[in-house]
Image 1 (tube, rainbow, N blue to C red):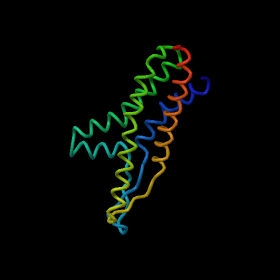
Image 2: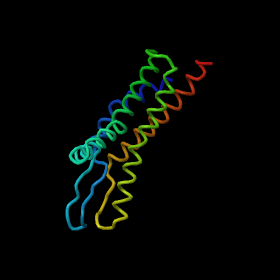
Image 3: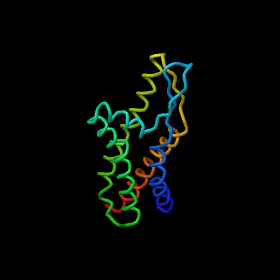
Image 4: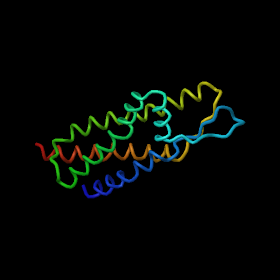
Length: 149
C-alpha cells in the first residue's frame, strides 16, 4: 500500500486542477475563435439554464470522486476501517457519470457538423485522475478484502 498513499494524496491536488483545466475548445464555426470549456465553466453555464441538473452533475463530477479519494486516504492511513470500501466503490461508480457526459457532449457536437471541437490537455488530466482513482480503489479493495476475511 506504500505507493497507493502518495498517489491518492496526489489526486487530492490534481482533481481541482483538472476541474479548472480546459477539457476542450469549442466553436460554432471554423472561422470563429474557440472557447475553452472546463468542468467549472460547464457547470456555470448549466447553472444558468438548469440548476437541478447542475447540482446533479456537480455531485457526480466533483463531490463523488473527491469524497471517494478522501475516504481512500482515510483507509490508507488507518483512520477508518476497510469496511467502508463498498461505499467508496459506489461513489466511484457515480463519479463515472462525468466521463459519460463529456463523451456525449463531444459526440453530439462532432455529429452536428456545425461546430468544431478540439480536445485540450485538461481532458487528459481529468481522465488520468479518474483512471488512477479506479486503480487505487481496486487495489485498496483487494488489499482490504484480506483484512476482512
